[in-house]
Amino acid sequence: MSLINYSNRYPYLPIEICLFFSELDKSKSKTSAKSISSFCTHINNKYPETGFPPPKIVANICTLLCEYNHLSMINEGGPEGINNSYYCVLRDDIRNNEIMQNVLNRRLSLAIYGFKYIYNCYSPDVLPVVYTNQDGDSSIGTCFKYKDGIVTAKHCIEGASAIAIKGISSEQLRSASFEIDNRELMDLLFIRFSSAIRSEIAFSGEAELLDEVMAMGYPKVPGFHNFLTAETAKVSGRLTTSIGQISSTAKDIWIQQNLFLITARIKGGNSGGPIINKLGEIVGISVNLAEGEGDYDSMGYGTVIPISFIDKIVANDNPCQLNISGIKFSDFTV
Image (cartoon, rainbow, N blue to C red; front, side, top):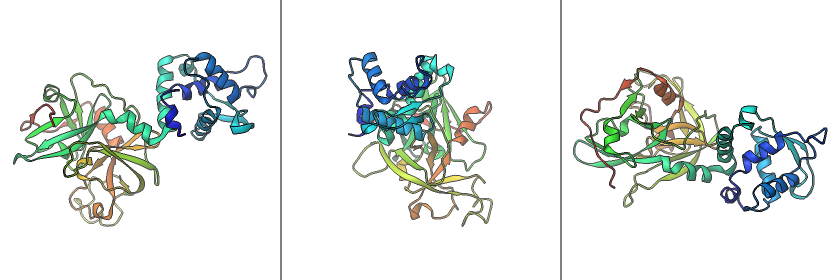
């Protein structure tokens, strides 16, 4: 059975494993007496309502925690690893703080249980944007909650006659600040609200070549309306000022910054959606290529701006503001 099937029954396993193997056995000079078998007995006593956790599942989680450098193996043995023993170096501020333990448990769970778990956790915070142009035609884009606000591609808002975002009221949008980068071609926007909105998306990171990532968004599919999709891909490279067609003019070199290429095409309404790595970290935002960038989309690549650019906009005390004077904000009714 897949690990994710145990995430609801034993939601506390990752942090409990770290706590258990971080505490020295006072009666022994080594931690080797602490095994998966003794951990399962400990959990059965602490949470009798959930029952004895399967040792094989615990062993699989421990293997992943070792891979992510949260555990170190001391001894290995027994059928299905039941006698494996480990040690975890856990900071005192985590060991003694339940809130910090919950944060770490969430982070570890995202990494351990994989993209399906990540999708289930983050899908409530990835929202469709309905864009109505000056001719009255509507299209769909994507945004996501992040750092008490909303992130999207600038072109998902700019130039609209009307905008609606699922779960965000027209009143909230009218009183919000629409913050952008000072470079015109940077296709990013952060919506800052007068009262912070709650988000489950708490972690950001960096992507490297060949990292596996997941793109979430609301693609344009004839006959269907605002359904959230997820597609896995690999980071296949970066566009820089020295690659291919991006070399001739100031317009062609875009913003003179790196952006990711991923092996999945960004499909219309996916623009503005998050790109998430296997650790559950947001690493970028799906965007359109600036005019003059070449034919990367037709070759099957999607283009992504690293999340660090949004973090800079969020941290700016005096960011540039998008002109929204001509936009009517309405409640999402699709």
